[in-house]
Length: 173
Image (tube, rainbow, N blue to C red; front, side, top):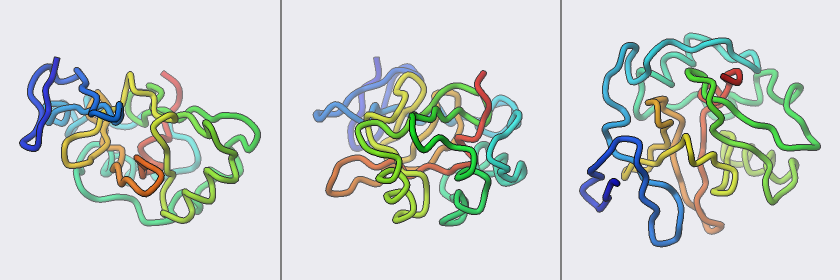
C-alpha cells in the first residue's frame, strides 16, 4: 500500500490511497518512470475521433506538463462520433484500457457545456475508472501504465479532471 503526504507518495507504483474525501485515488511518481517509449511502454495504437497521431504520442508519452490546445476536442470528429444519449467509455490511447465513462449523474449537454467552458473534456470523480487512473500529488492525472492524461483542477463542485482528448482516444484493448 502506498502512503501520500505533501512530499509525495511512497509504496507500490499501482497502489492507491484515497484522501479524506474518498477521491481522487493518489498514485506515486513511480508510475511515470521511463519505459520503452517515454513514460509509456509503446507508441499509440489505433486512434479514434481523428486525433493527430504525433500530438497523441507527444502528449501521452513524452510530456508531463503540457496539453493539447484548448478546444482541440471540438476540432476533431469527437462530436459526430460520441453518443449523446448514453455513456461513452473512453480508452487509453496507448493501452486501450478504460479510463473514463461519461456522462454519469448528469446529461450529455451538461458534460459538453462544462467541457467547452474549460476547453478540455472534463470528468468528475464518478466518471473516472479508478482501476486504471491515479492522480499524483501535484495534480497530474495519469494512467497506471504511465500515460499522461491531464490534470485534476478542482472547482466549487469538487474534483474536475481536465483530460486531453488525445489521451483518451484509444480503441478498447
